[in-house]
Image (cartoon, rainbow, N blue to C red; front, side):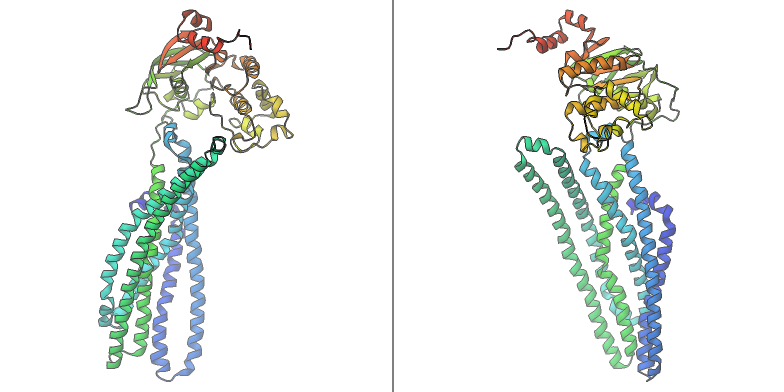
Length: 580
């Protein structure tokens, strides 16, 4: 029950629906308990006494009873559904808010398919228990309590003999619960792995087909699907083994009742109507007991789902705004690194080591170096996607950890190396960071990013709806739209993480000329592998294994003859060569 206690804050506000459902359930159970006694009266006092004129009135009473019970059952079911539906509405919102607030570190290892499974299938499993399983469990308790009380009232000895098998049934149910819960947790995890594989495969379908690896991916999917099947088979095996056993124990109670109760009727110690009533009452106990496996099944699935939901809700939010967060009128964009070192895990390699530099407002900093040298890590620290392991990152003289996160990031325009576009119009994608901007501002940003011409060439222009992740656009077109998206926010700090890697040299040249105007007055960081992308920077930092190996202007670094010179020579050694 610990899982449900920890999730109480989501369902307790809607307890009114639960108590309405419970009240209706009490009425339904109370009306159900009238049936055995009505049968007793009909057999012993009406038919047995020859008062047949009462039969139509008893029949009419039964009809009215069923109508009232049907109405109460509707209220009980509808209120129960409202209880579950309203709860998971808040729970799903809370999960999504949590996912939005979790830091980059969480998503470094998270799998999309697994998160989708928790947000959909697991939440629905939890709702099903609240709406249906919980009511079934309460109905079981009520019928068990009322049934036992009525049986003891009618004939204590017969009740004791009939219920001799109940302790064995209770032990069986307890053992069933202990085995079925881990099995259903395994089913949930296997399903998450399966959906993750499907999501990854569909997202990477172009790569799969380009490398003719369909057979490999089919094999991998079949492996995940087989594991999911095996998890379900294990759960089915437990269910198949225990449910017939519980039914057998219940039926033994019925046999004992008929044998001993019939003997009492023959001896005249029990009326026939009482035996019939007793037979109905014992099914009010055995019937729910036989379905107790289904109730435990539902409970186990919801508990396993709740545990997976809590794994997300309990995930630490390492990057948060401080209690007294700074919100200034404007960020000027003065960035300083003071002996900054960073690694992504306590026992991992250092991604940055004692990096220091000063970038006043309006300065353009170029970052170049081999893959894994620490360039992307450096710019991630500026926007506080991570906190540095050692040292300080300052913006306008304040540590970035003192700023309100949203305020800080609204003043930083980032174009990531891996361009992501939403399945929406081009205009919406460009205006994503500032939905209130005018169409003129969108077009101006697109022109600066050298995107206006190709956008205008589409039949619907800026209203063109893009496919998933910008499907239908070339890599260079997607990058230019992403640059326009960053520029339209008018950021104080502009970060371009290899943002022109997918455009041709001619477009890059035009883009650099257009960006000179956009960079004016903004502190700009340009990560690039091409010398041509950073050669006009005010200062170039050459990173090597997390350290600043060289710094200076393009000309100074060439004259120094170090790493930068070697990169230059590799990229431009054939620029004077005559093609054969």
